[in-house]
Length: 356
Ligand code: HEC
Ligand code: HEC
Image 1 (cartoon, protein in one colour):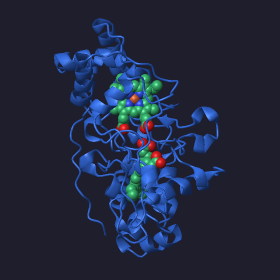
Image 2 (cartoon, rainbow, N blue to C red; image 1 turned 30 degrees about the vertical axis):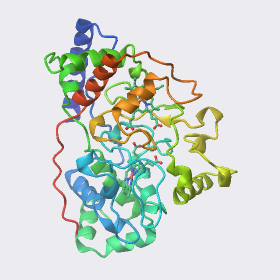
Image 3 (cartoon, rainbow, N blue to C red; image 1 turned 90 degrees about the horizontal axis):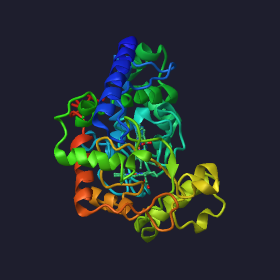
């Protein structure tokens, strides 16, 4: 399987090298790659199935109201459709719930890249006071007393349920959430009829005049790097005291000294304390982008038109990364057509698991 995938990748690379030269785009055409899987958490059908059950299991939250799927809804490409994500009852979240489609391709997870592996990531929302608010010692016992889980963990891991194994199973499930066979992928494979005229022109703008591919690079449309585009704050950050409290709580956890006076999201600065990372966020994938609005780390841009206007204007106030693009209405429309028509993969049919 692994070797077949490798051959396929080489084969597709050759094809793309060919289409690249033959279509003379300034683009970044890159063929589909296989999901990277860590050696210490290999994929097996039983592990994936167990992870899926846990992903949909509300036991993972303190009061039994929230599962991972509460904020990562399969039908919304594993987002929750809100600007600021949902929350543990009586609290408020402060950032937008990102898509989990193609999440396995990132080297940095979360908007600020604070975690490197899906195995590490999964424990965060469970423990987070404003997401699932669960005590992990308690969760382990809750899972251990369910015979079906005890048996499944024994079979998959050769031992009993632990927080690490819970996270490993969930990570294995997340590695199956891959956007496949989008029109873009068929185009890269050489099917030149698959893009409409507008989408094709939009692609030229994406990788040319619009400079989008500078950052939304490669087959996952993300360079996995961080940029301070100075996206405007979502007004609820200061208008809703519960959102403000969440922001300041996170800043406190990350040892931000003056957290009580914090009035904006410091982005990656919270993690690195490096000035250049002030308000910087990771470039997100654009796969499934038609389904994942509202957009940006705080959902402050409602539509792709607003996103394109944002970039066309040279980004947010005072940023040093972007320059105005001078796209006219026709070009903006073509760029949007490319995003909407070509980056949505085949419907991932999800059968909801029966949670024991
Ligand atoms: C209450 C809503 C909520 C719940 C419940 C929740 N998440 Fe999330 N998830 C979010 C938000 C919001 C973010 C972004 C947070 C940030 O970047 O600071 C996120 C980020 C992520 C990311 C990183 C995505 C990326 O692009 O880097 C992964 C992976 C993820 N969640 C998986 C899970 C898993 C697994 C669970 C269950 C154990 C879960 N989430 C439960 C809201 C939620
Ligand atoms: C300098 C790097 C860079 C360039 C150039 C760039 N982007 Fe982005 N893009 C980002 C970053 C970083 C974010 C996340 C910002 C945030 O969350 O606050 C983003 C966010 C987005 C989003 C929202 C994704 C989501 O899930 O919320 C879309 C859509 C998008 N960009 C499209 C474009 C288009 C179209 C262009 C070209 C006109 C472009 N980008 C140019 C770095 C870039």
